[in-house]
Length: 483
Image (cartoon, rainbow, N blue to C red; front, top):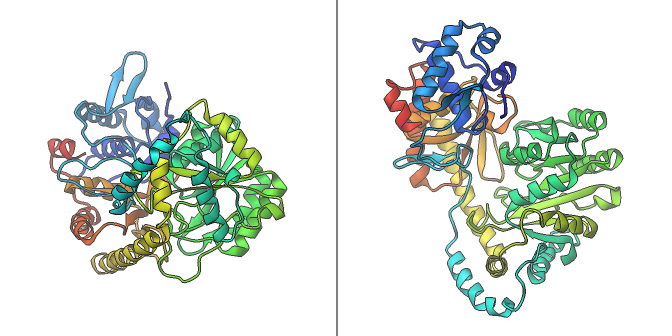
């Protein structure tokens, strides 16, 4: 059983103490419940002993005991003989997995996901793919690398974007997350250091942690992007085996890494033996500039750097097309294909044929998506400036979301208050380590106005509650129903 120390829990709790009349034990229980719902405290984790948490937080033991009792009453903790208090979910919890991918319950709006709805041609592509399927039925269907015709189509796209690529340098995966996890467990040995951005995509960070990595971070901000000094210090000092980066329309800040900084990273990685794992799922979703940056791997081999690129159509076409890809040198593709066999035996043939058909009109799809995002961004930015004039809304030229600075460390409280109003939002600490980014919230602009406007109405009510330090809910029964 995983145990959480008082110090570790305190780092994730951040500034949890309430204003107004909310009792300390309620505020503490509410913050721990949010950590469980967000997946920052895994189910089955043993919470710190009451005495130790009380000492660390300068609380009475009675306050902690009452907070734990409240968690047990609401179903978010359980007393286990010999193990103390353990995190769990209520038996009747209906909102799905407690993570950034949690599903909104009946009557709830969802701004926690940065995803676009499916494009209409998916259904047509599926019908056409079914007609192509008989030509492949004589094959085993167990192919860890993927259909060559699809790999060639993806290689041709890389070549057209300025990075010469062959089909042998492509592997088809079960989405980008599967690709990230496969690369992590193939390259990393337990105890290796891995570099991640702060903030970063939570599930990628989780994949590195599951592979046994010790994480080191470099900051990314909406104003300055990647910190040059930090890169030049952290990589030489820690020599990470792997660095996970999202250099194009970074999630969640929206920043794009300039060409000079990419060259610098190539050289640093080559010098210190770091494999650069580059997430390109946002790379072609720019909507406010004419030029598109070269793929991150362009020029890397000449500088001696190893770059592994990961992509998918989950953001551009539909999350339900569960396919992605890895671009790497031939030797590494071979290593990855062998390592893959312990987890799965290959990507579905029919879905690969669907993707093959979709790639034929992919440029037109991207043009339409960029227009959707341009419109959605203009709407969200204008509404935020009007409704929340004290918030800092960054300028972005692509991606799916905004990393908004609230001006005060209220992100987790706002997320709880929004749930009570019937809205799911992604609290800032979900994208950091150890409770960081309480001043930020991620808000997607990829939803239609029919979703965005009512969601902002709920968010505005939640913010009025938080900023005035009103209680988040009037009764335990209401909290239990919506959280």
